[in-house]
Image 1: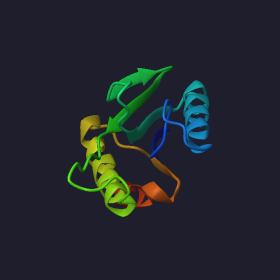
Image 2 (image 1 turned 30 degrees about the vertical axis):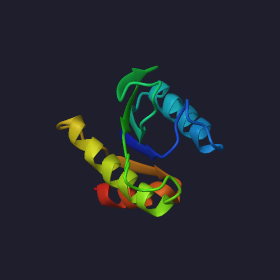
Image 3 (image 1 turned 120 degrees about the vertical axis):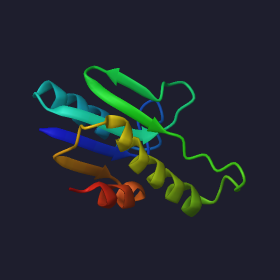
Length: 114
């Protein structure tokens, strides 16, 4: 099964439990024979496209430098838009399952559902 996971936090960015959950679930699903792609947000210490333990991890940069850092609504709107745009990097690969982890990426998940 081809699975696309969306998460606003993914290691090494760990704010709560979502990062560990998505990382563990993605690796377990890959070990079980599924094709897993995780789309998350840019981290300065990580490449924007990498394969980690068989899981492809794509990262989007939702930067909006003209807005204050505390404008969560605008930043998450940009993040969701950028997560949707990442799917174009997958070429003909299309997920059978889109799993949006947390309400902050729900718009992207809804936009990408098949």
